[in-house]
Image (cartoon, rainbow over all chains, first blue to last red; front, top):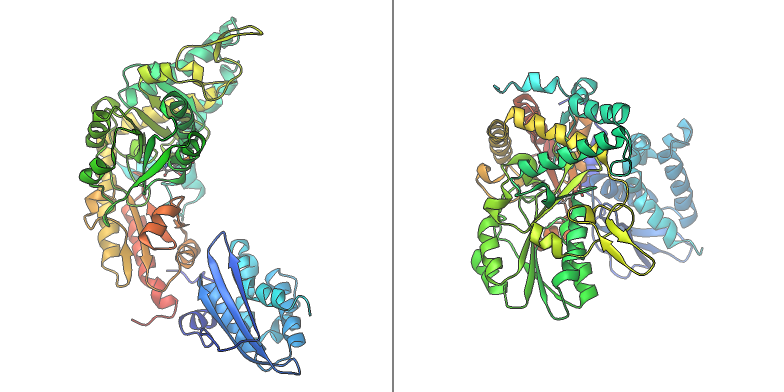
Length: 142
Length: 408
Ligand SMILES: Cc1ncc(COP(=O)(O)O)c(C=O)c1O
């Protein structure tokens, strides 16, 4: 097998051994996101405190490794951040997936930068952005 | 002609264009030999005129070539007469034609249509659509885990109200060739009709519509070395004669006045508008090439490759092949799943390693739901595939779970 593959270790670890794939009791927000064409299906669960800080987060669902790892990495990054900061990360992530982010922006995405090569795989873009778009939907009235 | 796969591959420009690609998505569409491409070109360069419409030599020549293709297709499936061959765009159009026109001819409110659960959407939705229109009932013939059907179950579904059984001659998921002949006998006892989907069976097995005694058979040229945009609906002439047309317009009439119309005879009654003569000529060339290679040789080589693929994949832990556990029932189609790895990741990793397969539900979503599997990966072979390609495919599948971070 050659190594021309986009499945790096960060991605496969978050997929095979997710940190945040479980339910949480009484989330303050819960939203399902689906890619009908390929069947990726995740539900995000988020808890925030009175100051708008994300105190708890998780997801459940099924889908390809890219959609699942992307969700796991996202949750890991946004816990402990404010919703505003989380939405800023979302903007950067989507920019990266569309191949428009600077090196600096990509670096600031930490583990999520492991998905940067998806920008060369048009057919998998929607898998990578599903959880981030769901997060955006969740707070669109904010 | 002896079988030399590497010599055969030289006839296909695709393989010199993509030297490193193992193309294992032949169930979706096959590759085309240069001779087929040349035959289509030659038609448009030398014989191009609208068939049937002119009395000048060129139009007559174009008509002759189109009709010669029809005779070739008739002979290829052992039809009684070329009038039983209706040229259409593809199997999907053939099945829509059959559903519409046969529905108009014989289905009324309260009648029953039986569809197998294994059908491609193309042999399911036209019948459901027609049944809705006619207020007829749809019943499903379910398969066993190995993909086979029980004739006893079919018997219990058949009633005096049954009008049609729609069933595939070879499943695009399991690869199994179904016993159309025995099903036809049971269906005919009830004076109903059987419509077989030959999309997968015609390119990979001997087809004899007389021996099968099926009333209709649909197939596409593009899965059997022919061009895209040409397909066939075979129908018994006595039925085609009694069925109303599907599309109306030019070329399918005898006389039209402002008050009345008499339709042309079969098969032209079903071929409204300018026909795909270039496509038909290409299909005829494809049939010549298959005949030259020999269907027996094709079956033998495909069976040998199927055995290697089936045994290789069966030996890999956490890999599960759908359908029969005998490779002989697979006819070049290996649909599988890998524990905890999504089919889209499987096909992506294979693609990253220059192996083309298909992932998803392969246009058989009801079957996937029935089997309770959201989606699968499918490798589908053709006689021009090589043992080396199959071994490379097996080796790559072996690496997928480790690559995805699973250690057992
Ligand atoms: C069993 C079966 N039926 C019908 C079809 C539809 O063929 P087409 O898209 O050429 O109409 C296919 C192929 O996609 C098939 O595998």
